[in-house]
Length: 376
Ligand SMILES: O=C(O)C(=O)C[C@]1(C(=O)O)C=C[C@@H](O)C=C1
Image (cartoon, rainbow, N blue to C red; front, side):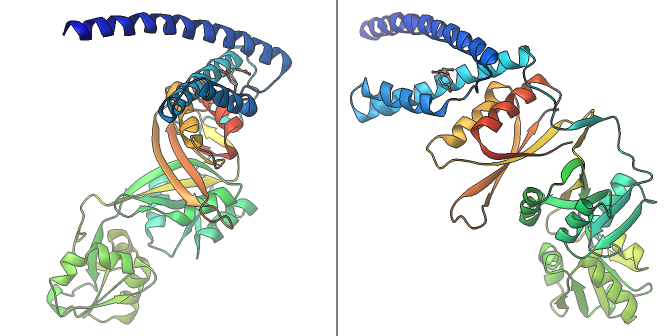
């Protein structure tokens, strides 16, 4: 026990010196920060940091210590950068915001596009956000909707980005990177499937069930209880509902939303037949203008990273040191570059806040092709 106390005393003495040296180092870094503001130099100096890591590693012995001191210095230099970015914010040297702040969206006169057909969940999400009387049209694919926005054929598109049980809608992530369109809002709607048939039909009449393959899977427990029902896949849940109306055959039913049933005049025979209760989908509202709402509190960005050890770690440190809470990270393969990835990150904040400006400034310098997808 006495030996431990003695050793800890030695550690305390070393740490006292290290703490003083740390403070001294940060003071010098702050002077470097002032110099950088005056001279317009960038905060992040990749070559200097690389050389510094090689230099400190050469001053200790053994692989374990070499790696350890490099990790320590990566952290130290990351902290100096945060300090310098802070100085830039204080000196007002961060320039204009990349997006224009607006008080509200013009919802009443807006023309809105959704993907699918009448009765699709996308339409329900659109109405949840823009109201039932919204001026809208629909297109066949997500890409068609993004093109309609880019060309100005519609002011907004409402598109799915994530399902609570099935996860990300990968294609949407790729399209957000590809198009110059931006997220201005989001809305989450419950995805509650029903078994719906012609008015007057009884569940005992049913022999064939139509729906989108995913919806048949999401309701498999309920459907499989009726072993004699034939399950037939069609392109969309709303298309299934439409077919039931058109065929006028009481032995047929659709797995679709209550909303699609209403649109095609069907009766809900059994409500809420999902395997998973609380199944919901997050939809984003996309526009071609770089705007954000005053009360926006979430930011989505995407970026690529250099193929270097620690590059994701350094990028994520911008969230930590600016006290920003990261809520989601996704990665998608970069087209034409096998095994390289583009990262999509959501974090809490509003672009007008200094901490967010600070983080974006740092991220922009250190990541490749940083794109702000929206603040909403
Ligand atoms: O040398 C600089 O330019 C510094 O700002 C100091 C420092 C460091 O902490 O050592 C910090 C950031 C730079 O990316 C490189 C090095």
